[in-house]
Image (cartoon, rainbow, N blue to C red; front, top):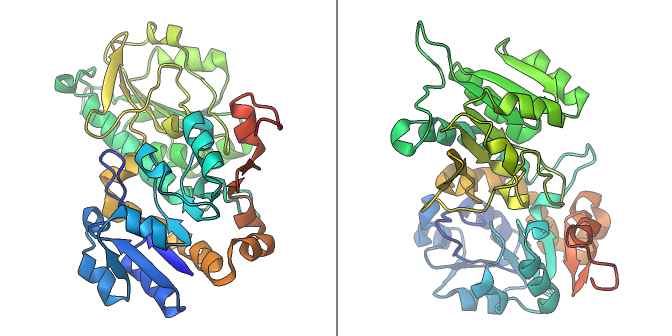
Length: 366
């Protein structure tokens, strides 16, 4: 199979779909790999690094799309790429369709095979291709939150770890999934007081078992959320509903009850956000302020640490890429139930019901 690795063109996205090590494995299996010139530079990989493992370097993104049977990316195609995608072409990337109706309609129109990293699900019910980026984003949420709590960044002026004689900052984490646990771990490591909310008691018991005593768990409901947003300095939104739009757990009216300078980091922004006032931002312009509350909602947080993110992503995507290349998408998905769950749109038909539900479409419209 011919596999294409285009350069990401989303704002401030420096990751690349595959490391040279991943390309080496594909070439070793007799597949042809096209890499757009400069695609890996943001992650620390030169064109020569790819050439040395057998990749063919192409000058333009158009060449990569036109010559490749399968495209391996990081982020969803943006508008400039829609017209490059060919009928029957496999596109393997993060899509997050439920948060973008224009993207969904464009991919239906292109009649491509859209396999979404974020809905590939293993037999244990976990999302193996989302996990590493969730780990990065969860840890980064505390890094970024701590920075934007500084007064020059319009935050409250709170040091998360506190100092002797001054209590530590308070961090509220919504969701005890991968993002939430990694955020809680980082915040606890800094010495902050952490409250983590979830509706899954099994997850809360796990957190209670593995986290230090200054990480406390509570059941997530509107009463508890309203109670805690009034007293916490940094709020991390880490709620995920697989393939669907995230629920709005923090509503606009709650902002007025928060301390001025409270920081919200909504990691769920890719799925529409779990805060009503969330809108996607970029690393170039990462924050905005509503009712004196600082909102950080960068839609590609791991893109700020592209070397770590690219290596972590290739570690988990490569076995699936090899399966698709070796067997073709039909056979690969038929033989692997995990990969089959990644199929979102196939040749113009939406087959992932959560997408249809997200837009209120009926089956006939999809």
